[in-house]
Length: 72
Image (cartoon, rainbow, N blue to C red; front, side, top):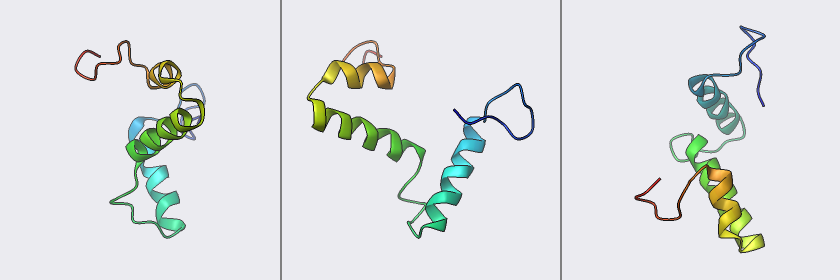
């Protein structure tokens, strides 16, 4: 989704992505200590479930094999 600016064959690392999100959040005036990449992941899953009530779709999008949070 986000190609690296350093190496054209690779994508952003998780650290580069986290820094990018932190910069965006800070730029629009949201507290970067509260809103981060994991928050975005949870928010998207919550919105999808709220709109569709399809727990399997959320499970698939998050990459979980099972619904039980202890058996991923």
